[in-house]
Length: 616
Image (cartoon, rainbow, N blue to C red; front, side, top):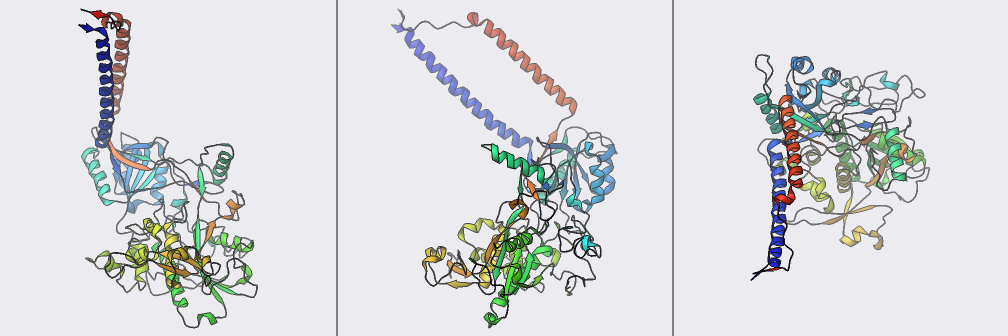
């Protein structure tokens, strides 16, 4: 005897099995789709974008459309190759792969004037750097925010006497409507060029046959127009939205400072206490985001100041000096003096232990790398004594630019301890310019900061997330060079208020990893006491909400969601249209078939019997 109820149970089992099979097919399709994507696209992982920056009056930088910009790749190795991109090429828009030596303002102006044929630009890093020098900054950096103005020293304002950066072409202060990326990896550049040679290289001036090698660049920016506009939009979002979408952030970080003789940071100095300020800057900038090696423009100067601070701290009878010395490492000086203007603002408002009236004299170190000769120049106010000009920062301001080189065949550790003729403070220069992740930098940092050290050099762009790796490393290097190792436990070091002999108002305490033991397997952590501290480097314009200020820096950085680049092969427009029509036809056919099957379902499919009926 059999029952229809048993058939119903079997039908339920079949349906469950069908669902399971459908789910497996869907999952396999998703996995296969991911695999297909990997077969179609080659991602470019070592790139740096040009991003959008804004100030009180305008925007600079680059961006792509929301969905990214795609174009056929064309390699430009000499200026004559641009003719194909600008007029002759039959398959616009193009993504230009530009040799680094051609990345100049004159050439970029030509591309900027034909944006309908330009989808983007990929720049390969020139090696060696251009012999004539390169600077995308302006000839008068921070014009309008320096010491001299129309009311004070007008004859020196706006670099009337001398162009401080004669190589500056102002390229980094232009606004481009298409994305621009830097290719940092030579192997990826070679892959792109090979794809171009295989698919895009025209024969005898004729149009190349499809498929063509193309590149897609994603770098859409959220902020537009100016800091005033983007900060107002962000403020409104933050005020009325549960999930606000912030479109830009102020450039900010922290200044690093220390005193030769400790001072009480919980109060201000007496008016008669005089201080000599020794200052330098920490930051640098290039055309591309977070690519700012700053060897000559920043590193050589703050490494020199670190060495000077160590020498003075170890000098005998330092406590008998008639004036105290404050060492300051300013952040954000590239962008209209963010760090120094904030410190002055805090001094004027009693938010810093040293007041303006306490400053006896001010000495600034800048570009002391001795790159071309053994001559150093001193500038005094108001008459400059320099008879040569200064080169501003760029992507080529690397270790090689100031002749910091190491013998071939040495290990990273041997390079770290190798003293060259041009670098007596070798560990500092090696760490900041060659390899940050070295044993000495590891020994001076807190355990939770190990991730800040990469295998390459540190970059010195101020950014919007702070403190940056440079700020932390300089702070702890200063603490290590000028501080003292004291006998405290980890708990006591992290809370010295529990130790009667220690004073947190006079000193800063840090529990660092310490050097390797004799077996070089474990580290010997220790507590370092110093006067090295951090002070906020955020422009007063954002504290005061004066986003259109002409007195303080107003630089912001746009936010974005996706920064990436990839290459792939594209078909002709005709094939794409045919594929679209075929797909549309399949869709219509599927709908018709589905409708017909649904209309005749009672004929095509037999309904199951009612459960419980018995058949013999």
